[in-house]
Amino acid sequence: MTSTVPAPAAVTQALESARAGQTPTAEQSTLQAVLLDMDGTLVDTEGFWWDVEVEVFAALGHTLDESWRHVVVGGPMTRSAGFLIEATGADIALTDLMTLLNEGFEDRIGRALPLMPGAARLLAELHEHGIPTALVSASHRRIIDRVLTVLGAHHFTLSIAGDEVSRTKPYPDPYLLAAAGLGVHPARCAVVEDTATGVAAAEAAGCQVVAVPSVAPITPGDRRTVITSLEEVDLAFLRALMTEVR
Image (cartoon, rainbow, N blue to C red):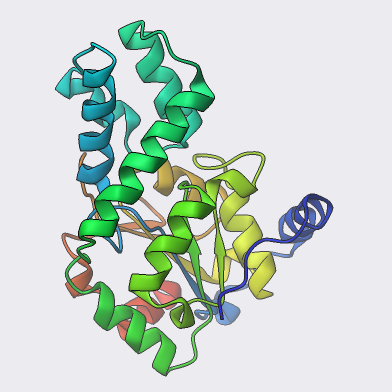
């Protein structure tokens, strides 16, 4: 069964422990764990969030500019919702807007929740080989728990929600916490992400990143491999990333 994050005091201790770890040598850099984003990475829901935001603001009498979609994708809801309130001048409190967005999203995934191509196969392979796996998302716990019923909670050792950490993506805290919770070093974790915000968080944590862009392009980097689909990813691919000389 998937574990969630511990109490706030334990969270702080875990983050400090992860940051204090020694960087592995090249000989030791084997894959210890896989950390996966959720929206746009495992489930095809980035479009759901935008559709809900458009509907909610339409009900408030405002039209969202399509260009804003790239601004709000991949980040914490507080940032996205706050930006949209400021951009539109909508007369609504941040907490009220987040409630409406979560409710609208839950309604959407209750009707359909498509998986990204290759997601089910990858999760099954990691589970079959006993690879410690964490779901690391900026979405709130109420959303993650709904999605886990489709993804299969047994595929994940633990999950980290955006409303359970004081600083979520693009800060490294969620990924540092996931690594600490799994008892592994961040540098020996492969992270799979779909947005620049998530990639920034994973790289700041010192992880090796596989980027599968969903909405906006992502450029390759020293510790970042960009692919077009999860169908290109399997356990052998992830293990090779950890031992590849860059």
